[in-house]
Each structure stands twice: as C-alpha cells, then as structure tokens.
Length: 354
Image (cartoon, rainbow, N blue to C red; front, side, top):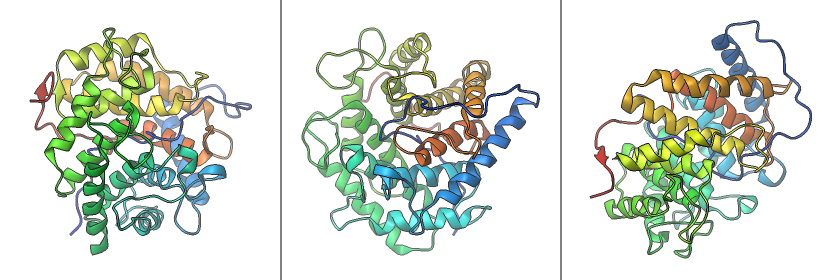
C-alpha cells in the first residue's frame, strides 16, 4: 500500500563535509525572472544533472565517495524532495535504483555501508541510509526492506556510547554532536516508518546533545569545552526539535545562529552542510511558530546565492563530490515546497527530555 510522503524527518547533507566554493563561478547573472521561477529552473537543471550522474549500480558519488551510501542517500532524498518517490514521479526509476543499492548494502549486523572511508567511517552513511530507506517504506513492495530497517534500529542502539552519542566508527567509544544528531534524525525516521525504536536510546541521544550547548546558546563539537559553531548548532537544533524539545534551549540556539549566519563563501569546508542543516531547522521552527516572515528573511538570500552558484551543467560543486553538493542544494531549494522536512507536531515538550 502506497504511503503518503510527508518526509517528516529529513536533513540532507549531514555527512562528509559540505564545503566552500572552489573554482570559477559560472552562473552569476542578473535576476530578471521571478525568484520562485529561478529556483524552480535551478532545481530542474540540478535534477537532470543528478539523475544523469547516477551510477549503473544505483549509487551516487565520485572520487573518494564513489559508491558511498551516504552520498547515495542524499541523492535519493533530493529526488524525493522534488516529488519523485520509488513509486511515482518523473524520476521514480532513479529513486528505486538508489533504494535498491542501499538495501543491498545492509549487512547482517545491521550496518548499512559501502565505500565510507572518505567520511572517516560508516556511521554518517548508516544514519542517512537508514533515513532514506525509512522514507521509502510503503513505496517499495520489498519485504526485505523491513528486515534491513529492523536490524538498523538494533544496530544504532547497540553502538551508542555511555553518554548517549555516536561518532564515526560502529563501536560505543567517543561521540560528537554531528553524528549523534544524524542518528537522532534516523531514529525519528524509523519511528515514523513503524519500526520499533528503544525509547531510552533516543532520550539518551537528546541528553547528549543538550549537554553540548554552550552558555552563548550555540553548540560545541564534543563534551570537552570548545567553541560554538554554526553548522553543528543548526544540526543540533533540527534534531532536538524533531525530538520534541522546545523552550529556552531552542530559542537561545536560534538567537546564536542568527548572529552567526552561514554563507556559501565560508572557507571552513562546511557551508553546504550548514545551510542544509539550517534549512531543516528553520523550516521546522516555521512549522512550530507560523512565523513565515522569519523563514523568508533567511531563505530568500540563501536561495539567491544557491542559484548564483549553480554551474552551467546544472550541478553544484563541493569538496566531497558534486553529487553531494547538487543533492544538498536541490533539497535546500525545495524546502518550502512542503515535501521536506515536514515534521509531525505531536509529542513536543518544553526544555529537556523527561
């Protein structure tokens, strides 16, 4: 039975880098058309490039990320964001091939991974592949998918460390905020797909992220003292909102993020990662507050910058690979279309987990 796609749990780009813009900008120009039409045209050009760039085995990725489930999941979710599921849409076949690739790389122990060495380990890829497959459940008449998702849930619980987090490797060792945020989003996706998730695992993950908020309102990388940074603050805010956290934690986080905006020209290597996380976090906040003006004030200049940075062939560049950059850009531009990320309003609570 086909499931209505609400894409409640997506953050495209939570992996492998993001990045500054290298090389010449090829598509700058005067914005003569309406902004919405420019965005729509950019998305369609990006989709054509992305679908053409898909490998014969259904994966996305090039250079060191060739065959990565992390990049493949991002590509798949970008195609979803533009209205093509594995069951319907102009790029349904592309979605089906990507879903098949991810499913085939689900291992007996629950890990979903292929070539993830360039991402420092398989855990980012596992989180994103789990999310993409969870979003596919109900669209694919494949009972093997349920087994992959059930094993993934158990694998996530089994690799969580004592503090409630995860890092690059599939062992309960140290942890960082970015991998932990991606796992919390994956857990939410599993819940919405009807897969059993250990509630304690999710609550401990929320607690880990909350403990990394600095006094200035931003979030640091690990438990040891460290500075706040915009990309990880955006990722934390999105994951916490998905988990139902409200109140001062969220307000202070956005106040800090507003004072430290992310630009495509940032040279820290995390620009697209940060913008994708920001789009998801801010869209979720817009859904919670109905503050359309705040969303527009952030989104309009970001969208103009993305359109300006699109290359002549329809792709967007990224230090990881252009497949990731293009997937991230498409998903950001498609956010206000209402296909992602739409998060259920139920289950919110104030401040911190009970």
